[in-house]
Amino acid sequence: MFCFQCEQTAKGQGCTKIGVCGKQPDTAALQDLLIHMVKGLSQVAKAANKAGIKDAEVNRFTCEAIFSTLTNVDFDPERFVTLILQCARLRDRLKDKVVAAGGTVVASAAADLTPAADRQGMVAQGEQVGIPETDDLDADIRSLRELLIYGIKGLAAYADHARILGQEDDSVYQFIYEGMAATLNDSLGVNDLVGLALKCGEVNLRAMALLDAGNTGTYGHPVPTQVPLGSKKGKALLVSGHDLKDLAMILQQTQGKGIHVYTHGEMLPTHGYPELKKYDHFFGHYGTAWQNQAKEFEDFPGAIVMTTNCIQKPKESYQDNIFTTGLVGWPGVNHIADKDFTPAIEKALAMPGYPADVPGKTVMVGFGHNAVMGVAGQVIEAVKNKAIRHFFLVGGCDGAKPGRNYYSELVEKIPGDCVVLTLACGKFRFFDKDLGDIGGIPRLLDVGQCNDAYSAVKIATALADAFECGVNDLPLSMILSWYEQKACVILLSLLHLGIKNIRLGPSLPAFISPNVLNVLVDNFNIMPISSPDEDLKAILG
Ligand code: FSO
Ligand code: SF4
Image 1 (cartoon, rainbow, N blue to C red):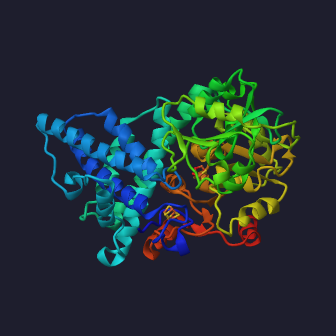
Image 2: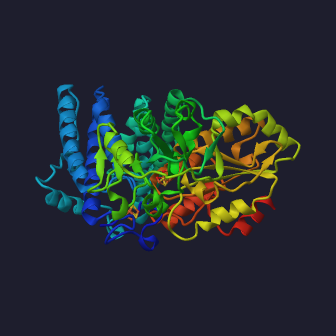
Image 3: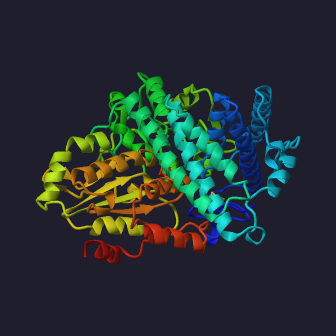
């Protein structure tokens, strides 16, 4: 196997024997085969688009298949076998439609590949189509193709989340096909691929706007909300991941059953949504970021549902209490495919729950674009009268590798006349710190999940409009932490917007070649994080 798509890749170079995430070589090969076949399907989908054919099932499948290969989503090889067979079936059906409509399907190895009859055969096929060695391919072309694929993985994840809430745009699907097919096109050079990567960032803004419309249209705009970190006496069910609809269904299905529902990880910001917070039994938040789940889940006295990434290998101690749903999967873990969460509810009822109330701190969530824009006048006034000196966006993923203490230290050291906006699971390094307020404006504003990065973009552009300047001229610094491919596409979106001087850590992506890094540095002045003191000095002078 060879995989270097995430930040924790082995030795900062690539996982070759087994994934640091726990991905086994056979699953890695099946994922490689699926991605290769989706490239072929994308070639056919482009021909279909030319012939005026739309196929909603292919659009949905493509996003689900790509999202399944994102880090920490699906580790179950059998599910990939099913996806590979489905890919071939949908591709061949689409080819027939194109031919019937008088269109032409270009022959290609990826679009013509027939999956082997069994899993072992598919693994062998996957081993032939993984990421090529650099000797076989120019290092910069390989780097840019992979950057584009990882950007599309993030884009497909956001498009899938949006579709689940009824928000779709054909232009998003058409770009996914264009981009995936482009990674097979040997005539494309460095400039073409850089252009496509930035276009991926642009299209992602559309996907994230759709997701924002889906989330806020269905559950209302988040409002500032105090979330308890303690627990309530009684039965307990924990929901992790990013999928608001799954959470809403769980809240509905647990109503009146004597179970308190808690959030874990990226589900924390859901407490701010009016249509979710209305449930009395939606109690509070438990635990921190994904990489701490083994310890935290072991200690949770109830059932656990993972709605999306990031899942880790469950320990034996809680293997029977954890359930997956949607695209997330782990071999041997109970999977709820039909959204009837009865098995998880029954498990929660059978488990001890909390014997007594456990007191705890509270944290504040709910500072999406609507809430922040509601106090925009106050914020602008505070900047003008110098009560607020600078804004820091400290956002992104958390992870297990050392070096991420930088982010908590940085937030602690940011002076008291500065505001910190945060989003995604990286916030758990400092989410329960009391940073106080500036004239009633909290100094730590939780914008939401990584899925809400669009909110941060909206806030930044609204501030720029108010000050009649560009985002780069604002007293705003972006200090980002990355881990998986949703973070890659958010970065591409920021670059598409022309945002400069982003600090990125804890390490730079292994798939970025030195020349590609130079392009990013020359055009965007993107830089690695250094130390909190040095970076603060450079930013604030
Ligand atoms: Fe974190 Fe995982 Fe939300 Fe990522 S839970 S790391 S960017 O999948 O999705 O922030
Ligand atoms: Fe390694 Fe990350 Fe790939 Fe897992 S997803 S195999 S940790 S590079």
